[in-house]
Length: 328
Image 1 (tube, rainbow, N blue to C red):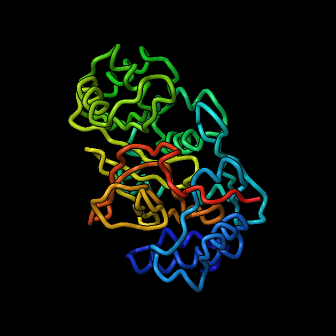
Image 2 (image 1 turned 60 degrees about the vertical axis):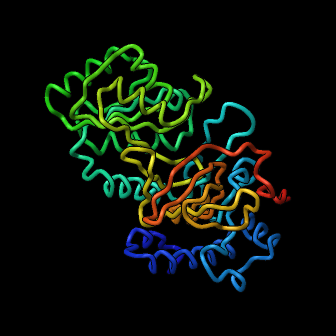
C-alpha cells in the first residue's frame, strides 16, 4: 500500500484485507512516527517482533495530551481538541481532513443508509460552546449533506426543538436526533414526546453538567421521555477518526477499517479473549497519519461477532503500566 493513498482502507472486504493493511500501517507508523517508534522501542517491539495483530503496541491515549502524535511532514490542516473539564486537553493534528470526512460519511452510510433520507437535529451545547470539536466538525458535515431544510444545531432552544420534533413527526419525516447525554436528559425533564419516526442517538458524556449515571438508567429515562423503543449511541473520541455505533442495548459495531481489542487490566500489554472485561484498545486505520493504535481509558469487552460493549472508565491509577514512559 502506498502511504500516500490510505483511502484503500475503505475497500476492506474481509479480515485478511484488514490484517494486511494493519501491518502496512504499523510499518508506516514505525518508520514515520517518532513518538510511536520510541514507544515501540521502549517495549522492544518492532517489525521483526510484531507477527500478529495482538503483538502491535497500543499507544496510551494520554500521549495526545503531551505530544504531537504525527506520522507525516505534511502541513497541518486542522487541530481537534478534547472537551475535558480539567487538566491538559488532548490534541489531534490532522494533515488530511478528507480522510476524516470519508471515514465518518462512509461509516454513517454503512450503519444508517443514505444521509439524504434524514433530517438531522443536533443537541450538542457543550461542544457548540467551544472550538476544535471533531464531533461538531462531523455533525456539521452530516447536517449539510443531509440537505434537509430543517436539519440544524440546537444550543439550549428546547422549546423550538420540541416544536420541530412534533412537526417532523406529523410529517412522518425520517429524523435523527443526535445529542450529548446531559442535554437529552435536560430536554426530557421538560418535554415528553412520542416519537415514531425519529432515531434518538446519545454521544455520551455529562461533561461535568450532571452526575454520571449507568447506561441502562440513561437509556431508560431517554426511552420514556422520547417515547422510543431503543436509544442509539455513537462511540468516538478526539483521538479517533472513526466511529462505532450502537442501535440499542449499548452493543457497538465498528466499520471494517476499525477493530477493538481488550487488554488485561493487570497487564495492559496482554490482549485477552472475548467476553472478558479489560481496557479497550482500538485499531482505527483512518488515523493513518497520526496513530491508528490507541489504548483508550475505557473499560469494556468484545464478543465473537466483533461487537463490543463499553462498561466504564479506568481511574488513571488503575491502569498499571499503561503510561510506561514519558518521551522527551
